[in-house]
Length: 337
Image (cartoon, rainbow, N blue to C red; front, side):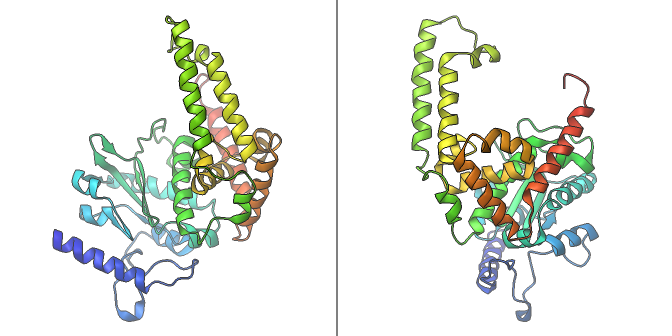
């Protein structure tokens, strides 16, 4: 097993060296040297898998023969899960993950996907074990691993495989955040106009300071109210220290051009949250909740829309569609769900 792992890593390193440096090219071996292309489906693969690979440059994988095959990616290795183990996707679930992948990729331009998306979506039944289970895992910048059915906290069961991408907003949010980080890893440098459109990133210093103040205020309030019930969420949200904290974080975001307080840490976090928002939310809601009350966010929005359109991607159209489909799904549920 050790020998095979070493051989795999050596081949992977060679693949990387032989790959084109053009950011629009996928990392793959040079054909004229006769090296087997390890990062694309073979000729006997499912036609839907081959179509997604040809159109978007993403190989949707659903089976691994050894744990090393799963946990070794280009310039990345998951030693912890290699020890803990993983389980292959159940065969009857393969059509579901193909539906999910097709739905997600259909909302991205082929040019952008081929330029910045990971090489692989790898679906498994379980990734890791015990306390080390990862429902959605970015392995380097080349492989996104997803458990299916997915166990992300808040994710819903698959009842409509064709439309599950539009129905499970919790899973979609987590996937797009991970994709955002992987996309940033493929960029030659951060988007300068976007970065300068808001406040400089501070490694989360301002955000953490607000968190520390919250902890102090909470402690003082509870000393004065020892019998308070923390299980009553509505009552908790009415507490003065909670309101103070939420208002302070909202102000940090408005002034800095961020979507969340945590986005103030780095370009990676900021870009990832913006990506998730744009591809999953309507312009009407984005304008109302984020743009009308913040000039830095309005500027960053315009910069990102222009950036994605340079790659043929009308990302706001994708967001409008997601919101429409999600609203249809919510309206179909029994009242109270």
